[in-house]
Amino acid sequence: LKVEEGTIAVTCFGLGAAIGTVVGGIRGQTIYNKPGGRHAIAVIMGVTTALGALPGFWFINTSDYGSHNLWLYFGCLVGGVLAGVTPPNVRAVLLNVNPPETRGSMFAFYSQIDDVGKGGGPALVAGLIMASGRRFAFNVAMTGWLVCGCVLLTLRGFIDADVVRAQEQVEDELDGVVA
Image (tube, rainbow, N blue to C red):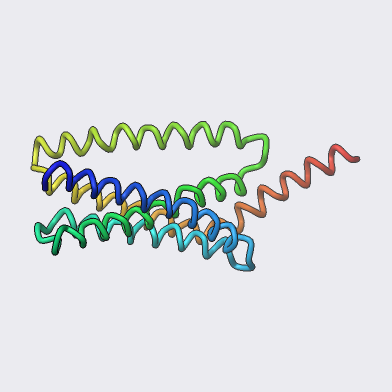
């Protein structure tokens, strides 16, 4: 790809991520608030994260992007939308499974892990590029998205109990203040 074409591809991914974040956050809140929504949001986060890797696998492993690279740009847009769904919903889930007095430290930990991923991921990929080439390195990165999607799917089995436990802790503390 030429620099201009790569720039358009990255811009399409970023635009898709912005759309996915806004729409995913709004729809995620609506889904979360419905009966059974906690399970559903865990599934949505896992599936969209895993599916977000598929366009990446495609554009990393092909060189024919169609007329004027339209399929590349479309794939980047779709990948961005799918990648953008999870972040606002993960924050909402974390907020609901932790009692108020631990949310500050929990979000500090979340921010640290997120930052390590933002710095460590590119460093790992750079090392893999040097050792095994660009295509292999980026395929490993996309595989990480699949693993992350599977981990997010496991939330389905725990989210209800964790939310109830956090709510009970708040109620117990409020009962102690009132009594």
